[in-house]
Image (cartoon, rainbow, N blue to C red; front, side, top):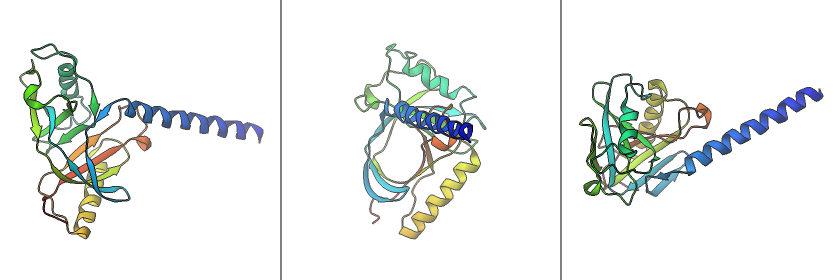
Length: 199
């Protein structure tokens, strides 16, 4: 009995340290700014300012970065650009598009605007601006896989339908944690841009 209690205490301590470590890792990075307009459980409507991002194509099935997309972006922020400028990592990593036309993007720090960002050395990497606007957002946990993303998107669309909100874009997925983070502790989000004049 005593051994079982010790094991439970050790398990609780490890889980607590893992949770704290994940939150600390996430908190160590600047995150894309937004203002919450409406909140209902895990659902939110947010206003985002224009965001400067560095973006690259993803191969079909490359959502884990195994196609080199993540490293292309990482090399850009660590100096693979014409100014050899190092740029701070931020959260989340955005993924969007279909398997035949998917992209991965890093959000640039707020102080660095798209027109002031250095030109990438890699021709498959581009800097652009995501226009400001409102988004419906669902926060969800779990791994980065199509099944999990599809379920989250279905939940978000159902909530939007209930609230009378109409999407004006394809979904964007935001991932906030490194790949070694346990799936049940990960912060993931699915976002749909909505028409600005909706309630």
